[in-house]
Length: 240
Ligand SMILES: Nc1ncnc2c1ncn2[C@@H]1O[C@H](COP(=O)(O)OP(=O)(O)OP(=O)(O)O)[C@@H](O)[C@H]1O
Ligand SMILES: [Mg+2]
Figure 1 (cartoon, rainbow, N blue to C red):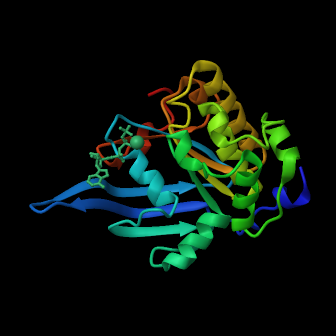
Figure 2 (cartoon, helix red, strand yellow; figure 1 turned 45 degrees about the horizontal axis):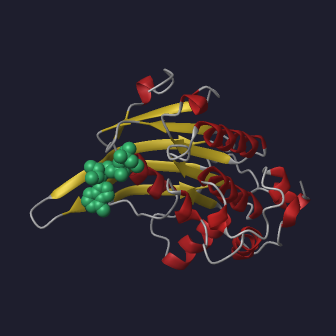
């Protein structure tokens, strides 16, 4: 691990992510549909959180707010103690390049399919103003020897691991992943879980939407969501 890839945002004692009173609603022609209601959530630095809840409960929406991809209708969002609720789009883009990576459920959505594996890693690092992490990172992430491959030559699990490797190469402090094992076979899912464990050990703050018992078995903090509301009272009770 080079010095560069282990450098994290200096600690100020603030949570990595803090949501206060977050509502998200969508307007249709006739009405407003609430999707998240009054969400308060603090995620500490280096914490591993699994977000569990039924289909349609708002997991992906909540991850998009945490990832600064969607803005709340009301409430506030802080990243490492900075209120970014009203930050402009260039600032949010900068934070998404350098501090917060969202890994989407569909492996193909996380990569540039016109670039090779190594070029994806380099491009993602450059976006964050960092040097190319090179083949050593691919090796560490179990993707050694794939550098020249087109991304379509990777399995879904390998694509998800490359997306996670890109976040490491970019040095982002926070990784949010939306059901990253749900489209994978058992062995690929296990390897993705291993990679998430590696990121946790590197000090990355993780929030992962999932029902995967392999992830829940790692003993993360489990936050439950139902009908757009968090249920903090039962958040540590184990499986979904
Ligand atoms: N752009 C949108 N416009 C209107 N409604 C939306 C929009 N995006 C999401 N919703 C609604 O918000 C609710 C929560 O959706 P979300 O995708 O966050 O749930 P989820 O928990 O991730 O579900 P799943 O487990 O199926 O992925 C759903 O009822 C969905 O239909
Ligand atoms: Mg979802």
